[in-house]
Image 1 (cartoon, rainbow, N blue to C red):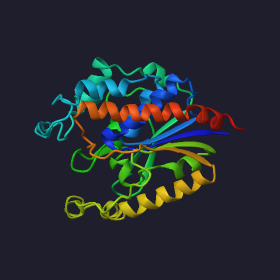
Image 2: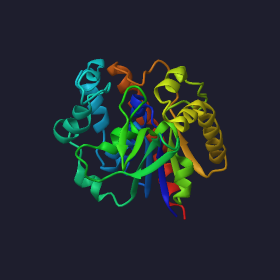
Image 3: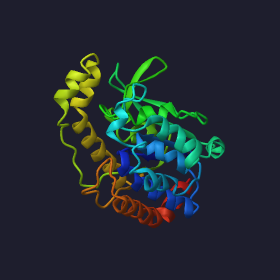
Image 4: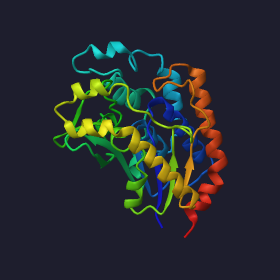
Length: 285
């Protein structure tokens, strides 16, 4: 038996997932054998694996309005070129302000992977999250939303946000041998993705990467099909799925602190309600 946790991305909507995971920590549900996440799903998820309850909530409550964290002016410095202050977000906060426990993360006995979209192939790559990287480059790459982040080069390959190629990597978790899988979504169960309104810009900006452009053109169809198949597995009792009741009016770069806390609380309530079921599901043999 191998337990698995799959974390969808969604930028700040992922605070719902953090609420779920914080509840699982508080209810002392054992950590899974395998964790895979996309974008903020895994960037936030490592705090769960380091057992730092409420760390992600604290970050947003303290820095959602801080221009060093998130502001259009961050595009101006040549070394940044991103809506987010990369050094501040991925080095200063975890290294100094709201420290990330690298020792605890290193002690996690399972496997943690992040999804990134390979611009050359148009496909998802699943890379192990380094246990000690003060720059958190892989976590930057998995969060690299087109146009808001620069392209990242890891191992000589160009990467952007993992959600472009595989937004909910439950199939990969199955391939990794997980037969007791929990999937945390950041969109409602009845959500249906529509075609990206920026496709014309994507075709121009990424014309040197035709396979990636094709991936973006088919993104909505693939996403909706993935969810349909996931819910079918859930009806068969093969996975447990947790999803928010509503994210209406919640921006992926939300600044309203009350909305942020409310969505975290929704996740916490959902996680607490599911904790005993997850514990039983993960202990089945």
